[in-house]
Image 1 (tube, rainbow, N blue to C red):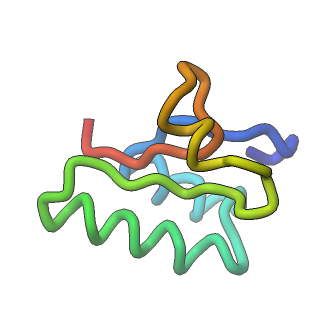
Image 2 (tube, rainbow, N blue to C red):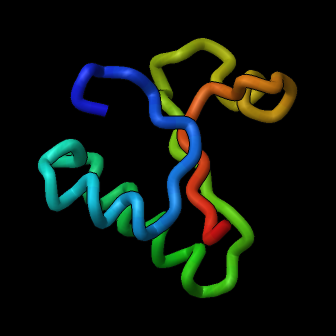
Length: 74
């Protein structure tokens, strides 16, 4: 978000609103557009992880809090 906090769960509609208000910009736009395309094509969900976070994928899979942003149609 605009305060730098991780948004853990977003829908394609949420992403559209955040892009319009400038919260999502730069290099995040193509990443999230790809996730939205996948979800709209029938994928149950997509996740964006920060590759600089050690063990981010394991944290996403095996902890309740996760480590990234889940994009789903809800």
